[in-house]
Length: 317
Image (cartoon, rainbow, N blue to C red; front, top):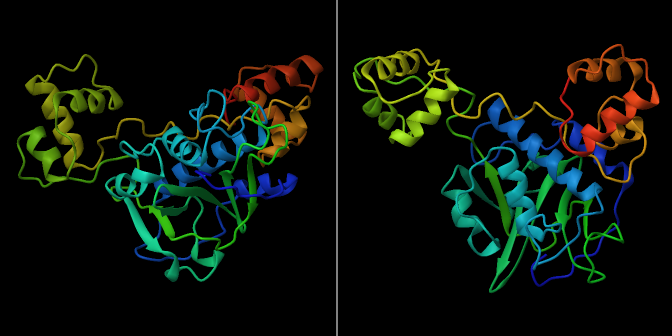
């Protein structure tokens, strides 16, 4: 919390809230979230809860960019960026609202929120007055996650309260910033059939048509060594007209499980902490997805999976 002290108690079971996206499904100020937006926001929530559960990360306004600590705004901004959500040049609560709203977020005044039924997973709770501000992220099931205060002046979180989850309250929140992902999905929307230029076609749907961005789009669509030749541009244009032109970065958000806390010595406990089925049958599937063959639950196999999970490199089954 920026210039504020916000006290709460970490709930050990709160991490399970991030495993479901059913809570907070009310629709305010627009239509329901696209599946792609919901997936990204769930990833952001899982990442933030993972940081909260890892007590090597605490609160700091000096070392606030994960080195190793965060403050309230850097935690939320980092979570969204980790999920591939563009938040522009947002860097603190002083410019978050304007930057978020310029990049696909809608502002919902707190007067329009009657309770948690009006909140969605990934909603950004926001307060700013003068030079003071605070922000957190709603994670579902009546809880939010946030960075609150440096209680001991040390790196990390010795108390478990500096970054944690807590029950939602209206506190001083002025409103909610909600991500809409207006284009939605892994593919760009179709352009009109009249276009003969990929530049004009991309411009028509509000997409950056610069050469640098076209290179990224080409790579996402397996068009290698893009130099802007007529053949390459025609290939992209035809895909766009069919609604089959992939966005850069699509399909990669949910490949890995979020990190677990560094304190875990058991793969079962670590998986449970991030809301993942820890049964032997599911661990066997996860092992196979991570090239751990003939999984039988040996100590070596479990340690291998646990180490990958702690690094955020454990692939989903």
